[in-house]
Amino acid sequence: MEKYRIAVIPGDGIGPEVLTEGMKLLKTVSELDGGFCFEDVWFPWGCQYYLKNGRMMPEDGISVLSDFDAIYLGAVGYPGVPDHISLWELLLTIRKSFDQYVNLRPVKLLKGAECPLKDVRREDVNMTFIRENSEGEYAGSGSWLFKGKPNEVVIQDGVFSRVGCERIIRYAFETAKKEKRSLTSISKGNALNYSMVFWDQIFSEVSKEYPEVETHSYLVDAASMFMVKDPARFEVVVTSNLFGDILTDLGAAIAGGMGLAAGANLNPERKYPSMFEPIHGSAPDIAGKEIANPMASIWAASQMLDFFGHEDWGAKVLLALEAVLTEKTALTPDMGGRAKTSETGNAVREALRKLSK
Ligand code: NAD
Ligand code: IPM
Ligand code: MN
Image (cartoon, rainbow, N blue to C red; front, side, top):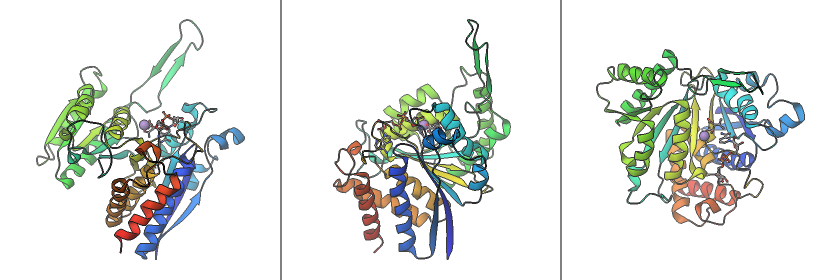
């Protein structure tokens, strides 16, 4: 029987609460299928680990993770440890070390999920966001000069390489071609006169290889307006690291909320493990109350199933989420319900069992 080895990094705040449900869901899938199984190894890395050990993960953390088929991550960051340390030493280090240059984030309004926009049909909110995930504004390059002096200066570089831009844009074209949908590039060439002019140029170059794909190009300010006013314009979307970060939280808001939004950090060449996670953070405001919505983590588990080639199960997990969203009896408070995290998790697994009969 095929066995998938999953490194589970629950992390901070609500991370452990939601991943517990996600991992249970994956085990239910494997039981129902009978042809594959999961071995989950949990790593207690995160802010508490940092406060004890002075680092977010052990020195050989990356090499330990490299032996796994996938990483399943909850959330990183908690008051008490500066965010730029906790995120750079764990989440961002994993994305970069494993060259997970594709951040795939569905912005799709599931049946039963509430959309805050007026006059929008459910099928109008159905985007596949492809966020560059290895460089750009997140390159981590810069300097801090004359620290604490009156002439203090900080410089944060945006690093856009030809290889980096081409591979993400080409991945997006391949996705659009496969899905037979249009591709929209979101950039900001009018103000960012080096990086985004370069991005636009590469988008136009690569588009010549894909005459069958309909393309659009928007400035990021207008794109954020259109996502709210006319979301049906967007199908497959490709954008830079920072723009993708911001626009996918906006996407989460129009597609049912942070409690539902998932993302996959992919190394498409499969040279390194890919990582699956909810896109929300550790939510310190609700941590420990057992009211966090596990649906985003469950959707990320569905993306993992897709990546392993079990798209039939990936799709069935989304149907199970839709069943629970539509029934509305086991929803957490962010979705207007009163259920606990585990009650929502149970309901999704129950729905999946019913769907599989
Ligand atoms: P957040 O996503 O943690 O929370 C924003 C709001 O959404 C909060 O009101 C929270 O209660 C709510 N929310 C988020 N997920 C929810 C869920 N599953 N169910 C119900 N409500 C949910 O963002 P933040 O408050 O800006 O960040 C908190 C910490 O998390 C910071 O340290 C930040 O750096 C970190 N962070 C980590 C990740 C990650 O690990 N991938 C992502 C974003 C933020
Ligand atoms: C996300 C998060 C991260 C990002 C942070 C926590 C570094 O917001 O995954 O969306 O900006 O990529
Ligand atoms: Mn984000």
